[in-house]
Length: 238
Length: 209
Image (tube, each protein chain N blue to C red):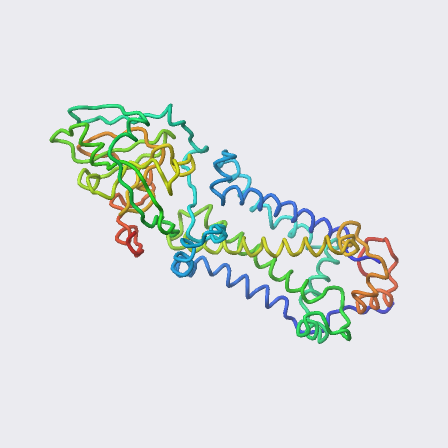
């Protein structure tokens, strides 16, 4: 029985396959440079893009991480923040009360330690310095521990870091109340540091002398997480 | 006229099902808005990872032995680009003198791309899932490549489904395994001729003599 099969011709398919696969897999190594380039190219355009089309592309967008199995949720009415520890006047504040405090706004890039960067995010909240001052820190207090109501996520800052003007207790993102995915109803926003320092789902601030390492510090990330000057990275400051 | 044997169809549809799950769960993980509506992020992540790890299984099961003969032969056909294929590409399918074999060059390139994309997604996905032994920059790189490859593959799949739905006879080749003889004569004349010469009995489902 005659057998005619189309095995003539140039073996292009396998080369295309192997070439593309090698290109893609090697991207694990070169991709961080590619990502940086893409952020610089598309970032400024995406900010001006009114259609939101560029918002669908994998650049300049938030990626949502949660350290627990679920996305923690709390309605503003059920939310409150405890500020205590080495404090002369520990207190608890509700959502409406927090919003009544003097607000600050700032627009900055959000930089994650894993490389992604969201350009020109608009934040609104209360200066952490004001929140702390109201509790009247005692002389022995040198640092702060932050706790999330997800029951697992914790973070720390030194008192000096916490008193910077660009560190806020945030409740609005891009003009809208913070969603659960973004750490709402209230989160920390530490502008000069990598995203993991900006604790989501904030519920407790404790003034301490020696802080216990936070969740990501226990995973090996730096406690002083200055953008571009920590975690072995060299990103531009936000 | 027999086009795809049982093994090939099983491989196609089991992989399609896994990719479907990966696209759906990936979309939930990717779009924060969808995440916050549906919640249960950890569940979707787990399903995404398990489906991803399962991805090579159908292929590895389908490839070896007697049952994989048709698949291996077709992979060989997808690899080779004939002079006609090159003219088809140059004329973007318009050259009427081109006589195509079993697959048109677009299908061959699509197969190479989809295969490479799946390998890339699996490799980068493994780095994302088991990131601790790797440098932080690798996680950044893997995130970047995983996202863009997924987007490109999404476009390729959309085009693939679009063309399949537009040509129900061709789609039938992957559903029932066979295509009408007139379809083969008209669209894949060289393949039609080969099949005629091989005098393969129709409907046997067993590839080759």
